[in-house]
Length: 292
Image (cartoon, rainbow, N blue to C red; front, side, top):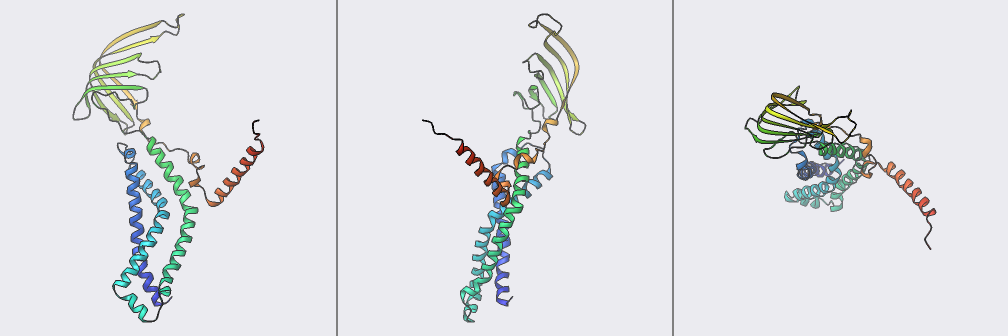
């Protein structure tokens, strides 16, 4: 490698790395703004966000490379022209095409590398990234009971609180509808006040109810009349309700459910998919009879 090539490549790779990083960062910011509502209010943890941004950074690399090559070429030759180095190169009898040769060769190598990246790394990153994003989108927001509004995120229950104190634990005038048996509002719990807290490393939510009543309307299975119901009412000074918070955890979906998408296939896999589509098309065409 001649000194001229080293000079031009040294001026090229600095702006290329910086431009690639900036473009990837811009694409990541666009991704965050697009799915910002899906991230708010969910206790996902730092590791989930690191994995998500890592996968989508890999996805955006092939999109960033063409712009990075263009900007780095303009910046490198612009800097060479600004410091009269291009003038010195021309004065030495070296043609412009010879000065452009190093970046041209590098651009070809980057194109080949980009193709290999798209064929090998991008399908894996797409599979990991989009499946993780789906799990994030389907994860419920953290527990947030508001005043005067029914809360339905606890499976099988509708909860309403008329007043919630600043400590986020003390509740006033609480109404709980039990829908776990899918038979309507047959069990209702009213409490004058309550204390809300979690236990066992936030795995369970506890409502400690005070001064309330429980109303139940249920069918006696031993009765000969299935439409006959019994109504009960009981009062309590203190009672506890315990709810599992497993529904708020993020559950990973089987990645095989996402592998059918074209963006998650390599060139060889896409070729096999095209062949199978052609075979199916021929079968449909053979079995098709135009109506008279």
